[in-house]
Length: 212
Length: 212
Image (cartoon, rainbow over all chains, first blue to last red):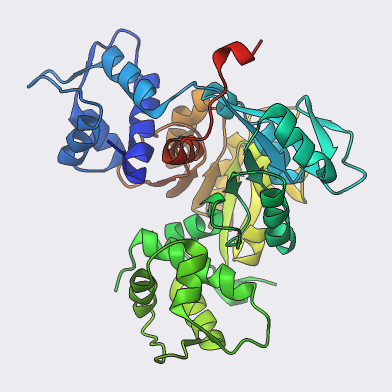
């Protein structure tokens, strides 16, 4: 059964919660998850039903069993290799982000067009000339790229990557990529998140005359 | 009318698309948006109806009008101030991320507990001792924090921030924060995104024996 995207997001969060529990806790209730995430109890139970697990009335879910079934269902810790294209600030931060490695995402190398960056190492990952990506995609059998180039270059680069044999692009640029239909793009829209956050709850805006 | 979160995400993406258009384009069709985002035409029209704009049959939406109404509706470019707590790799990258500034998010300062980092500057933003945050929240009237501390410190730090008067936390840690109910948390779940991406389309897994 295909798990909806929102459910995958929440299952990941239930796993975060379990990870933070005292090792002695044997059971966890749907109410505990619901309260921490500010969602309905019934939503939690529905999400967890995708795992084929069932909680016991008044007792809850067995912590270790639940943890393992989330991991198996979502493929935690299964190794996936990827390249980062764009060795700027965001690309470099993601290359150093240890949580990726913890969950199975291995950044094998980085690519850039800047001669100053090419040949350098970021967190032990070499920055290659982008011209070399097609041969490395083939040689290392990597088909996933994390795209962190400036937005002016995003579309051109995405199409270049498609031509180089990349199949999956995790797009961190504030752009919608216009790529061939067989390329699967996942948009990480940080600007959209920021606008959601500020629309959601009316975070106080600064008066214009406050600034100079 | 409150706009659902998914619609805000998509409206942002329509804006990205308009931004990338040739300046001479006068009209844009819902089909153009739909094709680039891989969604239904009817979804696009429904999303745009939140703006009170209506397209003309066979011609489409006036580009400039649509751009302005998205900006007004979502509050683009309205200044919002924030602090970054955690001056590590991710925090530093976000402090340097120019797209935030473009859309109105101003990072005023950073905070950390590491004596080596305190007093340094990242992209012109001073890193302060976390102990000073309560007074700076009050003095600069900032109520929003971008949280990028290591996951082991996330919960303790979030509660410390709540005590310091912070009201909104944009949480980049792989944790679900257990904070008082009046604190609004927005989770940026990069691990969940990664797991969605790999579940979605069965990105090739490396065989275990490939690794050493």
